[in-house]
Image 1: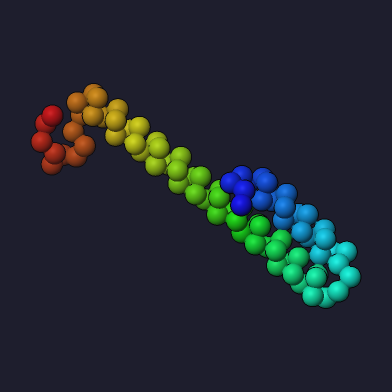
Image 2: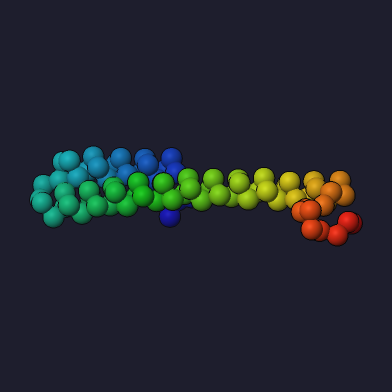
Length: 79
């Protein structure tokens, strides 16, 4: 299973191409479904990466605040 959305989209495209030239309805349906699954995976990978980046930025803000001696909230005790 790839971890790159671009690779997933490439595989989705390839499956769609195979589906378009499939010789039986079953193969066409199977490769069409496989293409959709690869596309869904690409979307999920992008969403997860966005969350990771967001969490990483939040973590950096937290560390910066701690190193600067700032309170995390108005209710927090001073460091």
